Every structure is written in structure tokens, then in C-alpha cells.
Image 1 (tube, helix red, strand yellow):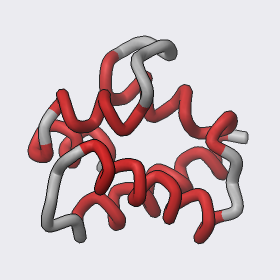
Image 2 (tube, one colour):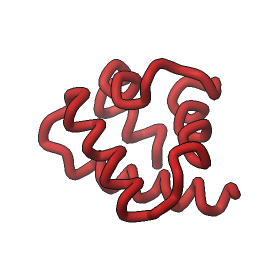
Image 3 (tube, helix red, strand yellow):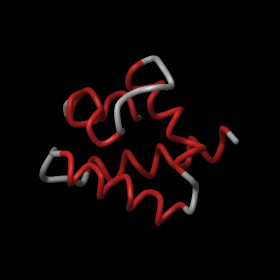
Image 4 (cartoon, helix red, strand yellow):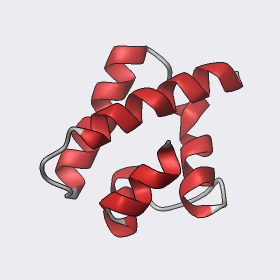
Amino acid sequence: DSAEAKQALTALHAELSALSSWDTPALQQALDATLAKTGIKLGLWGPMLRLVLLGDTSSPPLAQTLALMGREKSLQRTQ
């Protein structure tokens, strides 16, 4: 549901904010940590993340999308 998706995005934002490196492996680790901490499946919040990042529910893999979007823009859009 949308409340769980928002919870996952909030957790992801915290993980992303703590990153010292903004590359695909680090971003993938942040995505994986969010999954592990929240227990909310990516299928529930992945489309919402894609929507806030790109305005569409389909995109390349999320870690690559975050890397291409850049730290500042990705953090702004996941708040």
C-alpha cells in the first residue's frame, strides 16, 4: 500500500543521505539495506521511487537511475 511505500522511501532517503560515495554499487547497497530494514518488497515501492525520480514507473535499474540522476537531485526527489 502507499503508506508502506512512503515508509520505504523515507528509509531509503536516510540510507542515501548517509552515503559517502555516489556510485552504482554504493547505491545498490543502500537499496538492499532499505529492503532489509523495512521488510517491504521492492515491487511495492520501486514504482513509486521511479515515479518521483523520473515521472514514470519504468526506468533502468534503480541503482543506475540514482547514479545518473546525481546525489542532490535524487535526495531532493526522495524527501
